[in-house]
Image (tube, rainbow, N blue to C red):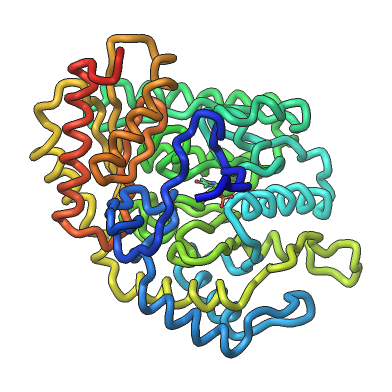
Length: 435
Ligand SMILES: *Cc1c(COP(=O)(O)O)cnc(C)c1O
């Protein structure tokens, strides 16, 4: 293969292995040249729901491509977008009745941020301009999305470009965590203190409900999400749930907010929206937010758009994906029990794996080393490489190993993923990675 001009995302091009070329993919399996197969145990960065190259999604795409591939979405609309918007309103919390389209998770968050900011100006409280986020929160890589995620490892070079964020502690927990109540109480006290100090200055609070993804599949109890949301709302702060990762069955319910029995004012969705097939995102808002923009004055409209907003191909595939999901909730409801079975079979006696936890289809655990944590940055690429040798795509996040499979993964394939984790954890304990 000649030298490639491609500059890959999140990749140190000097030290990274050359990318693996995928020729085709079906179900949970990626197929490389010469038929080499790899189990996609992270749903290609958390997007694939029903499996790769799904015939129902392919059919929807083919049909739509022959009917209407794209059209300007200002002053025009179309059936796939209308159907998708109605479906989303029907299956998300009732107060969310307005759907704003964009193309990816970061822009869904940007839209939420701009919406909240402009909202307070238009209801006569422009001093409400400050933002609250959580330690470890990740909301995407554009500047606005980084603004509310100023505690993930990747935003530091850009800090001078970002407005300030008030960061509240996040009580990440796991089964039998003895400190969970104390951690939650401390986080809520900090939030209360923040709000009391400037009760009329906060515009919005951003949280990844139930699971912080990029920070290492850090899970919190539903009670915490309920308490945070109630407290923010008591101070009039808009509550934004970033369900870009947790949406569409990931947490074992259709949405994390449904699972936790709590409702946001604004909801961001992307990743699984199209079943992992095409880039699309939505930001849902309450009628009250919408009404603050609904006016005779053109200057009070919401000013945000992208060239491909509401793309019909992506909308048609998303309708097909959501209908599949609604018809087969068992596909995502079954995985949590399977994770625990596999944990018992493959990991229970592996001493260097701690804090095994699940939230629906997601399972995560901590790989414990004797060395200090900075060692992990050298170890992680070696682990990735070793998992690929064993035929499994996994990307550890620091010391966290996690599995986030497409819902179609078979029990045999899932067992193979756990077998690989078992083997690699034992190899780490034996010092095979040069500790
Ligand atoms: C991935 C992710 C984003 C960013 O989505 P992109 O489509 O990669 O821009 C935002 N929020 C959360 C919670 C995510 O997991």
